[in-house]
Length: 127
Length: 111
Image 1 (cartoon, rainbow over the protein chains, first blue to last red):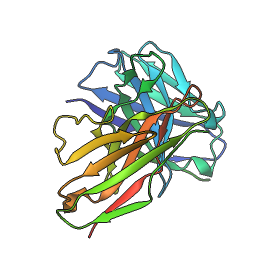
Image 2: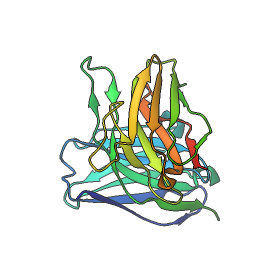
Image 3: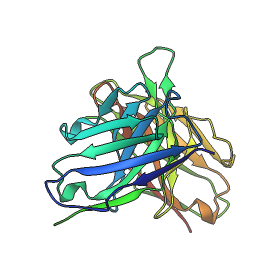
Image 4: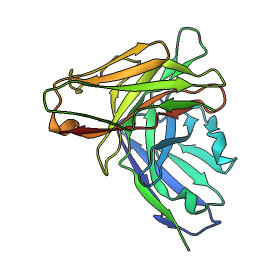
């Protein structure tokens, strides 16, 4: 059974860096998936933050204006998110998830499939 | 800007069928024909219900089905049950810049 678990500080001061880790069990983090972070502002919808591929390549939502960085630690079966210069607008529940999607026959359109999720971690940005 | 628009709320009585739509608009080549659908109960993580437009993961009730017509994908819940009361989100490829986007979300209420 694949399981993901977020960990990290639940309270971060404005202007500092938010750091979260997702520990994966039941699956190899090197197994060809897009390891993803998604967040949900209080009472709002889901926002895709970005992914880190098993190869180490990453891509982030442009709305985060280059504040996000993800990394992979295969020896610990973990992947991480760092979000710099946080403000109150970054207060949200942060989820890690596995994207088991693929490109369609055209090779252009990606079909995302978030098949496993962590339970979510509430992070509050406040002084 | 890529957007997946869903109705804010849909309701139905137990045993009825309801349909949630997901309509995509994009300026950068997103593909909204093949979506995945997620169910989220309050305080819980989202759960994959439908992928590749119409496929169900193992363990998901066959009361849930997905379809598409033109630029609109749909999730139908048949034989509505109290446990189906939740928020539902669609998700799709959003084009070469943002890559993945979620719909605005639909609150399903079982009357």
